[in-house]
Image (cartoon, helix red, strand yellow):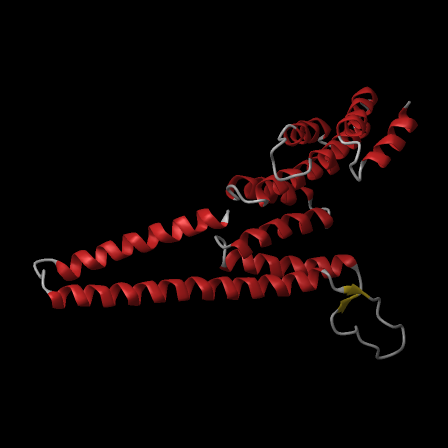
Length: 240
């Protein structure tokens, strides 16, 4: 959600609470003392409300940071020497690391589901499930996030992740449709040239070589300065 929209929602919540307090304190007491009490109550509510929101953001952000640190931890197979232990902060395999990171992200999403950190954690949950090969769970997680992320960047990112998951699961036509929809969003958050590259690769996996050529050509023609243009030219030459 954009900062302006978040601020607007906060204002609405605060205004509603303030209105109830003022009505309660000033009913039949339209005196200077009653007004002063109302002002003091409003200030107390406002300070407490914003302090609480800041506290939640700090706590959820810290938990997310821990989970992301686990996700990026080094892979270091333990020594074969007798009595040797795993080095702190490392994991013997990517799967072992991903399993621990998954639980950490799930904790963030469970405790702070509506926060920015909670939404980000939900994306990492889906991505980690995909990395672990748990495709059915990843598909569900990406779909849920895409529906619940509102106007945040994570909505199109979730749809992109969903398309990748569908492709990995062999649901090529569904993946192609999702990539196609995303590539048509010229004003969207995702780079269209990058989406087109993934769409072309999906066409190749589906055995649709003509469509793949046309899509790679779009990258070359429509985005000649793109970082993907060189790769697209090479892919196009290989398919011709």
